[in-house]
Length: 76
Image (cartoon, rainbow, N blue to C red; front, side, top):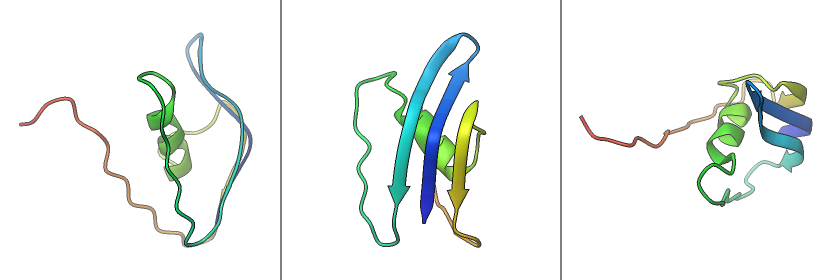
């Protein structure tokens, strides 16, 4: 289980994520959609624990394994 409570994330003076409340249960399917710059990648980075929220609490089930394949804008 992953639980986000009152989560915010700021890049310098830009608020990328505001007041997110989300609970993801085991075996639940979740789609994250939105336009460019809407904060989708930031949200996934927060959920994965790759970045820390500016404000709020993110809890994850102990020993939870998360796989994340980030998007790339070019190929090697």
